[in-house]
Structure formats: structure tokens, C-alpha cells
Image 1 (cartoon, rainbow, N blue to C red):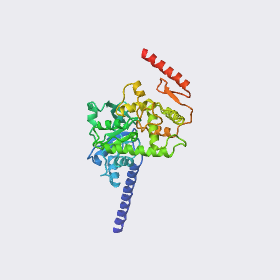
Image 2 (cartoon, one colour):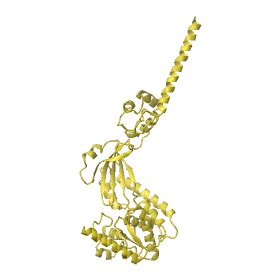
Image 3 (cartoon, rainbow, N blue to C red):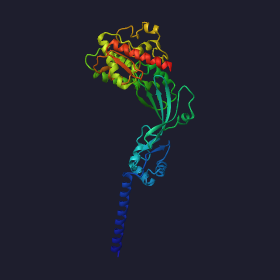
Image 4 (spheres, rainbow, N blue to C red):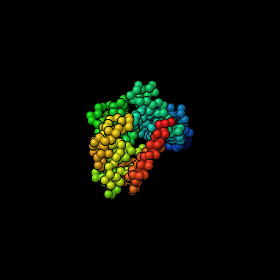
Length: 383
């Protein structure tokens, strides 16, 4: 009889083990295979959240089929205590394993609210934008001048832990403009001891965190520009009329200020290189303006005849060759244009009335282009 009981007990144990093994295998499949989410969502993990609270939220939003299995998997992976506060994008069909990795790996929030501080040549603006996971894009909530009283929409997200911050630096801004704008950023800290050298701040988009030091951010901008300058100098064309990387930076800054049209940068560069090779003066208004303003703000009016005639180190109507230094912070495209311009025989250009320029090989062609531009200006003024 005992033999019979033992046999039945062993059978039951085997069956139980088979059931448990099957359940574990099923749970593993549930954890690792594609999940039920049909549309991407943003998952917000508040500071101090527990894995249970997050799993319940995921189940409520239809991202996981079972919060319990999700928690078991998190415990098995030893990640239950690794939650990172923020807002994270969970794509459609993400498995429990993928979701667990997303909310525990750390780093910047990947969705939610973003504050973008745009520093431009003529204006600066703070934008508050919300991420739409369904479209994968940001939509503007509000925008304001940082010199004005911040709107409620900004104050509501200012201290939220999942708000992302970004500084967007436009091509052609001066170093003084950058420093002046950063001083108005209330989410940054620290004093700026001195304005960095002109041209040495790389226009780009920079992720920052509340409390970051202004000086450290400027150092990051400078390091990126140094790396870009080194790379373009190393890959420069032969026989350029420029002798140093500093000359490249100066020429690129003039190109940057002369045109905002990407396709024109190379052509503008070729004009200046041709003029330097021919021993002609550059005769470019942006350098004269820099001599008047020293890069501190925008002139806000046309140049006077007296300013065009006045000798200054930056008046390229008077001096030969390049001015003594950059007149703005050029972007990578202008740096590349300065060291690898296309071969042309162009020597002149003037505005064409459409936002671009009319280029010419001879002075007669140029004078005809200037006459057309002045006629267009007169026509617009009379409307």
C-alpha cells in the first residue's frame, strides 16, 4: 500500500511540477513577447513611485496584459528598485521586458513637456511644447520673450521633474548675444566671468538640466566649435587664400552673416575666395556693422555713408583682406563652405528681392543687378 501511495504522490508531484513549469514558461512568454499596446503612450514615473504603482498604471493604459506578471519579471530581473523619475515614450507593441528597460535605464525623459530656449540673431524666445506620442512630434503650448513675465503654462512645468530643457543656438549669433541670452534663462545658474571669443561657440541644440552652470554650457559650446574647426581645417581644399584655422573661422562668420539660404553658402564663399585671390577688398556690410556694434546687439537700421567711409579694423570697404577676427558664430555648413568652396569666376553679389542674391562675374553685370534691386526697393516703398 505504501508503495502505491508513494507512486501516486510522485505522480502528483510530477504533474504539479509540469503545471508550475508550464505556468513559468507562459509567464516568460508574456513578459518577452510583443504587448497589447496599439498606440504609443507616455508613461510618467513620479519621484518616489513604486514598481507596483507603475505596473498598475501600465495595465490601466493597456500597455501590459498583467501588472502582476510585470512585477514578477521586474523582481526576477532585479530592477524593481531601479525606477527613474521622468516621462518616457513607450512604443506600440512594446513587450514588458522592453518597457522595463525604458523606465529603468535612466537619462533624459523621452516625452512629456519640453522647454526650448531659442537664441536667434534678432530675437530670443522660450517655447513650451508637449509631446504627442501618437504622432511622435511636439506641439507648441505657449511661447514668450524671457524678458517678459512667464505665462502660467511655463510656471506650471518649470519645476516638474520630467520637463526637458534645450538651448537652441542659431547660426550667426554673436558671443555677446549668447551670454546675454543665457543670463535671462531662469533655469540655469552661475555667473559668466567673460564673454567667450567671437566665433568660438558652436550653433547647435544643447540638452540642459535645471541648475546647470552657464559657464559649463559655454564650455561645451566652445569644445564643439573647436572640434568642428579642427575637422574642417584638416579637410580643407588646397591653395586657399587663408593661412590659419582662425582665418577659416573669420571667413565662415562672414559667409554666415551674408546669407541665410543653405544653397547659397558655397557660392558666397567662392565670391570671397575669388576676391581674396584677386587682391580685391571684400566690401561686405556685415563686417562694417560689427565694427559699429562690436557684436553687442543688432544695429536695427541701415549703414550710414559715414560708417561705410570710416576706417575701422572691420571696415572691409577700407581694409584689405579679412578683418582681424570673426564677426559671429558660424555653423558647421558655413565652416565647410569656407574651406571647400565651389570653383566659380564670380566676384559680386547683391540681394535679389526674394531673400537670396544675384551673383555676377563683372562689375557691369553687378551694376545691372544693383539697379534691379533698387528699382524693386522703390516699388515696394511706393506700395
